[in-house]
Image 1 (cartoon, rainbow, N blue to C red):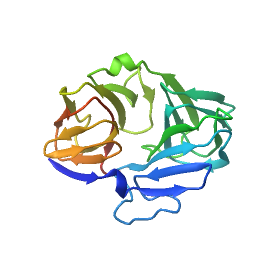
Image 2: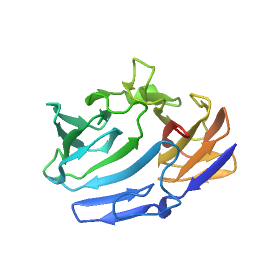
Image 3: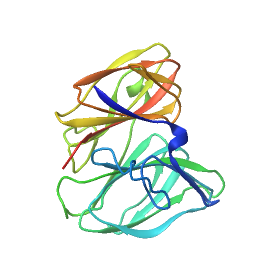
Image 4: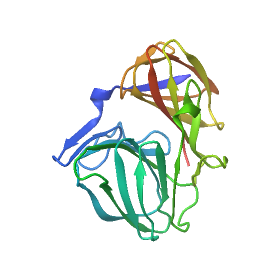
Length: 236
């Protein structure tokens, strides 16, 4: 197994008042040539947006964009005609494809929203833009892996890539085995809460580890913990 650890305090950071954001990879004002991406995972932003604030209408193309609210809700609008709210417990995916415009605002005028913004490079270019969202029960990830985004699972949101996004809530001292979904994929594990160990690597809240050259690996919860796993091709 080969691995690279990204500690939480090494992430890029911007605070514009209305937006307080940490970047796992180079993005916007943050540039680090050693932190451009992990395989085809290009962006993992940990965003906090003040009440009533958000990202006005802007364009994207040829990117798979996933949003996961951790606290609060987002108000989404895009050029496909979709206008929806995305709440904690739901996951959103948008295939920008040949071109899409969208806006994302805090659904609350008062309370902060915290969400993860994930960009994965697509498998097929210039597909028709599409949007989808789905609710996922937290009970289905209690001490086990819950896949929320996949190219091959009707119980998950579809993605235009050989990539899988999964979550798990682990009780202290629980150990689970994660099977990498496809040969030559790597897995980026991001700790949402608590502490876990992968081999000799102990990770705490918002730490991450990129794992390659292995078919599976064990995850041990040192405390009650919540994790995110992003399983992506290492190259196009």
